[in-house]
Amino acid sequence: VQLQASGGGLVQPGGSLRLSCVTSGFDFDYYAIGWFRQAPGKEREFIAAIAWRSGTTYYSDSAKGRFSISRDSTKDTVYLRMNALNVEDTAVYYCAVDMNYGGRYATLSTRGAYEHWGQGTLVTVSS
Image 1 (tube, rainbow, N blue to C red):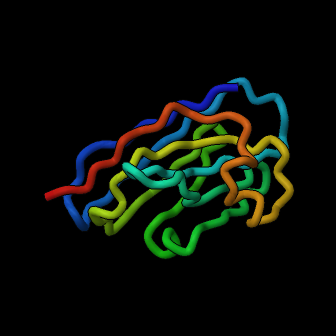
Image 2 (tube, rainbow, N blue to C red):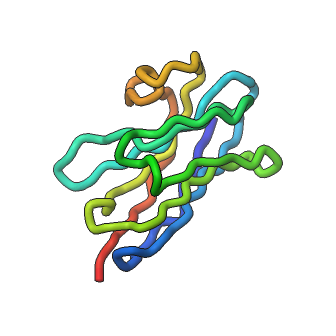
């Protein structure tokens, strides 16, 4: 099981980015992919998750309205579209897989629910 996150970079306040998470080695159906981020000196926080089979999406309160998670099953890829970025969005963004997806937000928003993680991609919002 592998996850490869990419798409980070430097963006000005108000700008947009789309992160990608390419997955491989998955031989099971009922799982979810989540995006987390970790800013310097802060805890890793949940942003969004998507159930791979159904496409059901979950968002943190801070992500609703600005961020959008989606998947392309033909490319084994999950995307995180981020709009109206501000300096507080500066962080390393990680994707991860919950192989025991059960459809509960309380679980999906918890770091410990995810068994495998990608390496992270840095997003810097600065003028």
